[in-house]
Image (cartoon, rainbow over all chains, first blue to last red; front, top):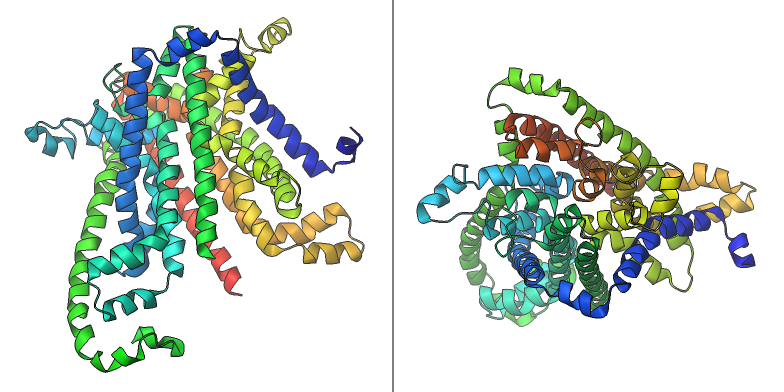
Length: 269
Length: 296
């Protein structure tokens, strides 16, 4: 106790604010979930509707994060290694998904990818529907997690010495071999970190998805929207159980990201 | 050749063959470069640039007149006022907290420091909807403090206090995250020197620490502000979304869209998109500032 009294003001504010703003709400959720009978908890957590939303949420997030893993690597490479007109503007614009409110992102993606939208109308003749389907959920998740791989990879690429690649070429390695065996391995920790950050963000995404999807169970309903639907029906147990599942998985991903980053730092040395 | 730069010749015996080998890759590089840049631009256009452009085109489709008329709607004006008011509360509070947390983490080595950094990151990992749910479980009618608040006649859920709490939760780490690396880089020597010269804590912070971290701090404040003004998920869970009462600008966008008032939705969306653009420009300027400082 005397130790607490001796703490300086920054310490007191940090610990006090974290307790009220962060630890209290998290414990409210977990304690409320633990008052649930374990059998009931399991039944709600694994009900067919819940399982279908996990499928849409996690599988779509993973695919979106992987697509951004490939294209994010490409974007980072192009931005670091090449010069072309408007490069600075494009580089600055990469952060747009961070800055643009998610409801605006959802609104415009729904309109661009709807059957009479700019891009949707080009896809419609092939029978591809994007807005109000699971594909639309994927597009929204790709949009909001786009910057992560680019921004984690850029500084690593900037520091990487070109000499090693050129040495590999001069030793007769093909361009593909050079990329696969020389360039990619040291970038891998950063790419994986970026993918997991993007995955984590996509799993939690709500605003853009709720607008671009039709939110029909077993079709394109995500876990976050299911929580809201449960709350609207005053089904607090249902909302709490699914919220807890989502929270625990998010914390798991956070832990994985921290481990990945530690691994990446070790790679640097 | 660049692999000989600074006397670092990796494979000196290969040097004689140099003149013949670079000629071929040089042409190939151009070709690869064009393809890679095109694919990049195509991808960015499909998922980002075209949707972003669409916001502005849709908003001004019917001309500037209807756009300006939408801006004078009472529900819209109320949404702007509420959004700004929430930001005016949350941004300063989270700035003070962020500065304290950054100081605690950057200037002290204690057990559990890594844990504290991870805890700080929790709001990034948690879905905004789950954040909103937690606040409902704490302050809602059936929540921990529900009966207490009800007897004191204080309304938090479906009112502004909950919207402030939700926005503050979501943006908790931003300032600390930006300030920690700057504080670490600045080092504590100047602060210690000031202390031995007899400055008090407040003088040290105001005259020594703050000038060192000002750009990082400003960047964190701008990110916090952008996120608070744009937050949708967490706020929509706790607000009840009542027009002219508990509706912020992002909630207004969704509501108008659902009511098929597409024009009104896009008019509000343009304001939020402009906020995003201003945020990006300021971010770019601040990054230039810090880069120039690093070179010095």
